[in-house]
Amino acid sequence: MFNNKSDFTPTLSDQFRMSAKWRKGHTKRFSDPRNADASRRLLELESQIVISDCDWETLAPLVSNPSCLAAISETNRDVGFRKHPRDFAAWLENLHGNLTRQ
Image: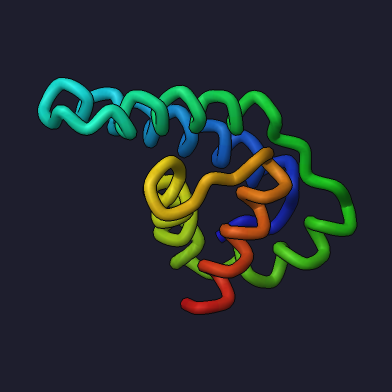
């Protein structure tokens, strides 16, 4: 699916924004305040995207699989609910875990 970091990074950014919008929509449907918090957190994580060459070497074989987008979505759905990544690096660790399980 993704053969280089320069293609992967903008896709991640798009996925963070789409997930944040999805969570924001849930704030109107459900009274759970975690949705608004998760929406904000996803946008914060999006602003922190930096993937080192070392991290890319680890991710590259995993993100070449079409199931990568599903793993990104799963990782984003966890933010603010099952996982509370302190920064983008922690989010990337969660993504790696989801990719290796698939």
